[in-house]
Amino acid sequence: MESIKLIDHWWGLRMRIGRLMRAHTSKQHRTAIRGRDRIIGIIAHDGPDLSQRQLADRVHMKPGSLTEALGHLEDEGYVTRTRDEKDRRILRVNLTAKGKQQNAQNLKNQRQFVENLLAGIDPADLAATNRVLTQMIDNFDRNYGEATPPKKGEK
Image (cartoon, rainbow, N blue to C red):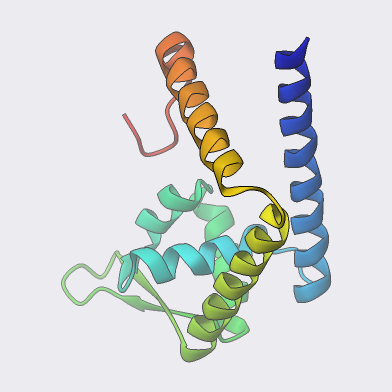
């Protein structure tokens, strides 16, 4: 059945991409910081002065796990954490120049990855794929959306 093949192919591609990302991250950074580039990217996108609590919600990490990851990123010079002047309980997280440089490299790598992944695919096929995936998301939300737990921080 073609619909089953489609899902099998999609799942296989998703798993390959995940394995590639894990292998790349472990070789590039030689560290066990989970989601390092994602943390840097979200700070770049949602900052400046993102609170550590806001960041934990956005990266879907427990505050304690994020604190540990930020400690490593701070030690390596990618981020700074400072106390909020008005509310000393709040820690504000920002990228350093090194963190901004890493984010720029991450974005460049992502663009190259997408170009490589989509090379040789006809633009009409890409447009059709986007329409199909959008419809699949709409169907999912309509049929299963209420049964799906919200992401942490959403209601």
